[in-house]
Image (cartoon, rainbow, N blue to C red):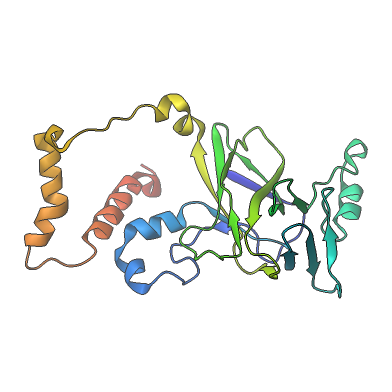
Length: 252
């Protein structure tokens, strides 16, 4: 489905997203709310290979990282991961040397910053990657992350994200031990305009008898059952999932 190529070695390589989001999901939601845990586990985590800090005064940006005792300017030309240029030029074919992607690149927009994860992703034909912040992980108020869809089955370039720094004169820390991105595979036809135009908005009077029966099973029956146990939706979804993939696990 997805291949990740690490140009910059990382302490935490890309991995499957976690239903508990690293233990941050409340225990009750983890046990009973299948909607939250399914969304949390949809896709893969991508980590940064370098701890670093950024500060923005509303006009200029500075950055620093472990081992450097000063703040370095961030210009429109961008900056590179330490020592990556040399390593890239040693490995890359001659005609590609000098073309390693930049690590941090300020945008023309105030507070805009593009961050490369140090990796490239390639998906199976017909699949793209939705690039977003980590699902159900509390967001920092210091910056906002934009979402984007990259057609990674044909576009073989840096896996990056665009941020908008919100707080000025505040040191913003980016850590390697916390997922930076969550990437989620989506079929190209599922976000095509032709597909998404296939929608209808109806009134309550338009509900069919089948709709009302489904509403009764979902909303009414659990609330009139004195022996109702919590988490019925989670149990139902997990059972359907086991049945759906039973043939694959048994080889049928």
